[in-house]
Image 1: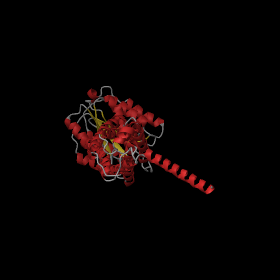
Image 2 (image 1 turned 90 degrees about the horizontal axis):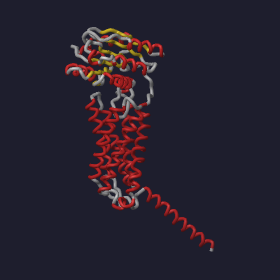
Image 3 (image 1 turned 180 degrees about the vertical axis):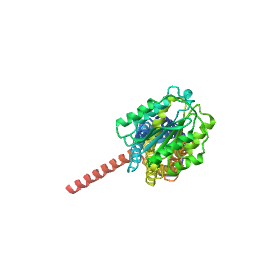
Image 4 (image 1 turned 45 degrees about the vertical axis):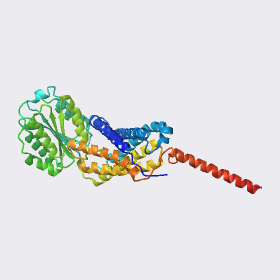
Length: 429
């Protein structure tokens, strides 16, 4: 007989599994974002999350089989362990990959060319923070990686700003080679630090090229501090909807760090702290990927699609499907069609809530984004397990498992066939 049940132990264990999945997911995002394509990154993120949630829910039922009954524990627990990885890591992970491909696909190409202007600090202090001139090597590496439809400009600054490379379209390899050669052959650092002049020079470059728009990005790298009238300098960038990403070396003092963070935060950009100059290539590569509006389900959208209703709907629907499949995976693990219905509906509701939270809560502030993802993971893990209190279910090992349902169907068909044979024999007589 079906009845409403609630397993407090499963709720707690599911939350623990979600917490483990969240931590592992954050490690995946921080360590592999610049190395893996977004579809594979999201497959790993949600696949491992589903695995840990499913594992802890299975552990909860092994300890106290309140939802499935002791008959399930005695007869079907072994099969549940075998279904764990295929139902969670594989099924949810593959679905997340496909959904991310849909979410990350560029349905329409902006009429404006994407532009990056790099502002590189060449002040005297860089002799200590970057003795091997890794900054210009990193800039050259990222230019070599850029697509042919990109425009790039390079401005160096110390006591004054100087345009090393005016904004140019990287239409072929010869143009790229020219820009790279200028970067690699730049002389050593000297002089002071004038960040405001560098930002003004970048603004002048973009305005003269008619590219002061959301498809343009400025990358500012410095290890020092200078007096900047933020309201005056930032206003044109904010009006144009442009992002300024800032990179600070570990040797930057508190005032310098505060300034770089303010510049990035006020324009919706991201601040990166670099402990060693050798890390600059990876950081610049990551910023380049961000400038190409490479979006994923658990990060803020930037650029022209930042306020897109279309992509907002796709994110919420995608999270609904991921949540529903997470619930279905538990039903498959426990081989219980009633629980599968309950968990799937609960997972879908949790997915909608998580999608809305991600869509409204993600910003450029790293700590806030981490908090939003943590709350979204908690919703996915907990809300799903609460729905057994609303949707009746009966214990597995009786009449409710997928396998037993099929067996019942076979037995019913056999009885009908046998009855038909007896009737046929009576007519033959």
